[in-house]
Image 1 (cartoon, rainbow, N blue to C red):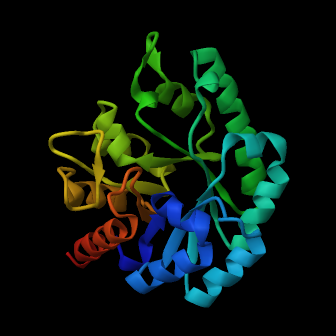
Image 2: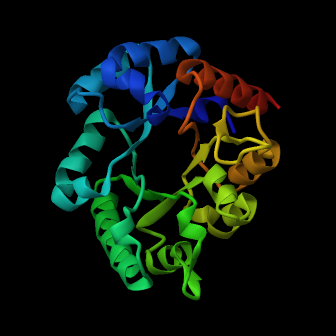
Image 3: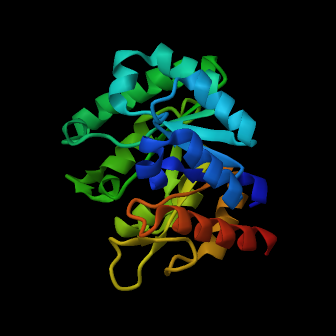
Length: 251
């Protein structure tokens, strides 16, 4: 992992971006981030967001775009990715009604393949971001197994959230090795030793980062994206995660 591959998922600082996207991006740039992954545009048009990011020297490592936006207007989603300069776009979660059984998940995989083909034609990589539920039993299989099997690896990549894989009872390093050639992006947050539901800044928990980052590097991951769902202090936690990743990059 190189320092210029480090990014921050803006969901971490969502309370700040909701009130002041340009100011939040400025603070992140001052902390030292050079790339961010969008989770909404904070009320800005995509072209406005790009201008702000360019002024601050920030790149878009990717963007999370919910399923309903894909179902209603995929062309607009792709146009927004071009506008913000993002080569990656990610479906962040499958809602409960789209993951009830294997047949429903197969239909979701078909939709992912369609959108992935649209993206590939535009020079954009389409990915799906996991949580823990993909690894839970689903009859004799899991949602993860169905998605991996029934999506085209040339069209649908995987943004692995290593914390959620661990929380879901699977081994993140094994998953990385199994599907690594489909992984361009990884999400990084740390796991508390006493309450695994409470995510922590990178370096303050029990995740084996050196081993995980080495495996991700070996599999050709492009972006290493810090994130927290429940930060204590979003800006300070983001700073802590960046400093730890910079130290790991040096090592």
